[in-house]
Length: 137
Image (cartoon, rainbow, N blue to C red):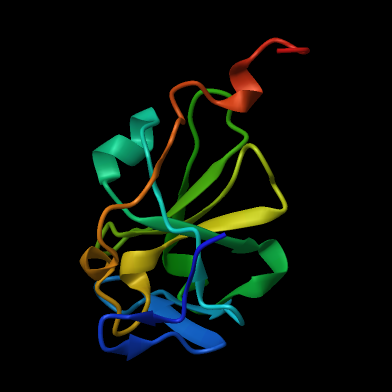
């Protein structure tokens, strides 16, 4: 597991804030080990939005401002829940289909963090999602 406790000049705080572009939506993330395993995904929505994501347990993400500004987008199986600010359109987080007990969050929304400073990241194979495979494969 890869942990990033610093990204560029920014130290990742154990409780770190994240926000959308307009600042209307503010999240608080429990990141005691920093940003863990940031990645890209090649599924249909992730390749279009291009965000760097990392994950935390559902209990480690709290919406502290702007919950009413979040809009939900679901597609295909309608299990994953993707959240965007309806004012500025920025993707902030989503509840994962492969593990509903986990939120993936947009690393680019972390205050003071430039996700491009992470370098080359692994890509999750969302095109061949584990939940789309027949049982036993």
